[in-house]
Each structure stands twice: as structure tokens, then as C-alpha cells.
Length: 96
Image (tube, rainbow, N blue to C red; front, side, top):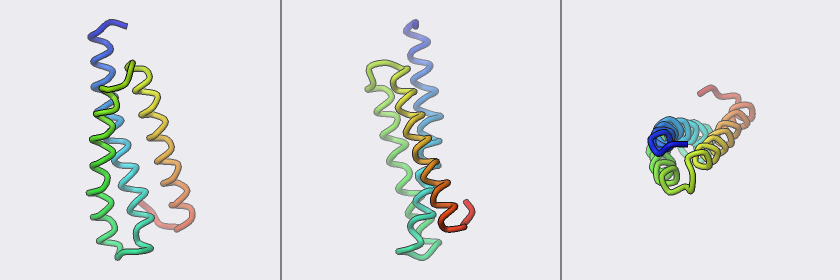
């Protein structure tokens, strides 16, 4: 893989994967937090907390040994978070 291709893959992974991971985190937390907070406060807290995985994804993508490894890690974490969203959605009966 050429250097330009590697950098392009890392940028796409960081932007797309970071967004997907942040959206999944926000969705999962907004489904889980109403147990301890009011729904409106839970959604606000979830949205603010979802910024952290987005930033950490960008750091992880550019710190990984290869672009393919970064893509695999990001895809795996994103799939796991969205699986949790589906599980919480089925348990609570709420929609996101």
C-alpha cells in the first residue's frame, strides 16, 4: 500500500469511524442513562460524553501500526457499540 493510500485510509477511518462510534455511544448512553436521570438530561449527557470516543478514535487511528489494523479496530469497536444499542433497545422497548 502506498503512503498516500495509507494516509487516505486513515483519514477516512478516523472521520467515518469516529462519527459512527460517537453516534453509537450517544445512542447507547441515551438508552441506558434514563434509569438514573431524566430523559432530557440523559440525552444531553450522552451527547456530550460521545465526543470522547470520537477524539480517541482519531488518536488511535493515527497511532496504529497500520491503516488496516486501525480500520479493523475501529470497525470492531463500532460494531460492538451498535450491538449494545440494539440490545438496550430491545430491553427497554425505546426507539432511538
